[in-house]
Length: 370
Image 1: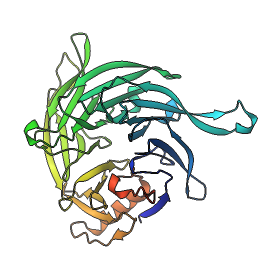
Image 2 (image 1 turned 90 degrees about the horizontal axis):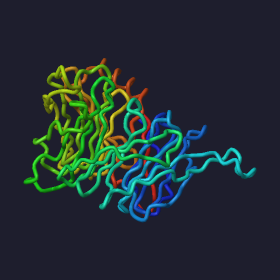
Image 3 (image 1 turned 60 degrees about the vertical axis):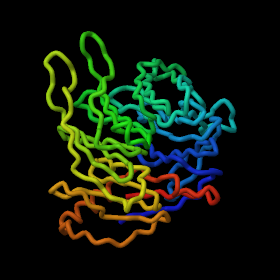
Image 4 (image 1 turned 120 degrees about the horizontal axis):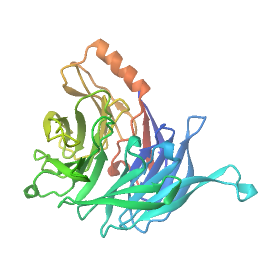
C-alpha cells in the first residue's frame, strides 16, 4: 500500500530539491527563496520543521546528506556559485538551549565561477568526500582533511567536461573502482552525448579521474541521473531523466594486470520508459535498486519495476496530490505482484519530485512512504 502525505512547507517560493537522510526519518528541502529547511518525522507520524535558515544569496538548487557515520552533515549548492557544508550541533552554552539543536555553517566551497548545479557526498567507503558540478562544465572533487573538523576541505581534482553540467551521481559499488556520472542540460543535439562516465584510476604512480565513456545515445537535455544500489551485481545500472527515462547497464569489460579499473564499459539500454512526451525531472531508486521512481511535467510520480525478463513496466502512478491512479499489470503474475508489494513495504524511496509539483503560493510538497 502506498501512503502519500501532503506537508505544508514554509518555503516562500519553488522547492527545487528534497532529500531523505540515511534512515529515512529526516528530510532536507531547498528553494528559490534561498533557504534550507530540515524536517523530522515525529512519533505521531507527522513531519515537523525543526530548522530553517537562509544563507545563500541565490536560488538553492540541491541539498544532500552525508552518511551518519560523519555526523548530521548537509551540503547545499546555489546559483550564487557556492556549495556550503552544514553541521547540526546541540546547543549547551545557554541553559535555555540545552538539548536543542541548530545548524551551523562549517565550510564553503567558492571555486566555481558560475552557478553550482549539483552537489553529492561520496559513498561511505570512500570517506568524507563530495563532488560538485557547475554550469560552466567543471566537476570538482573535495575531501575533508579531518572528519572532526569540517571547516577544512581540500580540492582533489577538477574535470572540464566541455558541457553545461546539470547533475551528477556517484556509483555506490564497493567492489569496483570509484565511478561518477555527469549529466548535461545542454539542449543542442550537436554537442553530442549528454552523459559522461568517469572512473578513478591508479597508474604510473598517479591517481586521477579519467573519462571512461560518453553515452552518445542520449542527446537530449539531462535533468537528473542516479546509479542504482549495487547488490551483488557484476555490472552497474543507471537511470537517466531526459524527455523520458533511460535505464542503462554498464558492464566493465576487463581489468588490466598493471592498473586498477576497467578497460572500457559494455553499455546496453534494456529500457526506455515513456512519460507521454513529458520532460522527466527526477529519478530515484529504492534501497535495493529494484524499484525506480520518476517524476515529470504532468505532475505525476511513476513507479517502475522489471520482471524476470528484464522488461520494465510502470506498476503504480500517483498524482501530485498523492492520489493513486488505478492500473492493471498484465505482465506481472500474482507472485511477482506479492513480491513487489513486499519490497515496496520494506523500502523507502527518496521523493522523486520536480519543480512544477511545488506551488510557491501554497508552499506544499508531498512525501511518499513505500
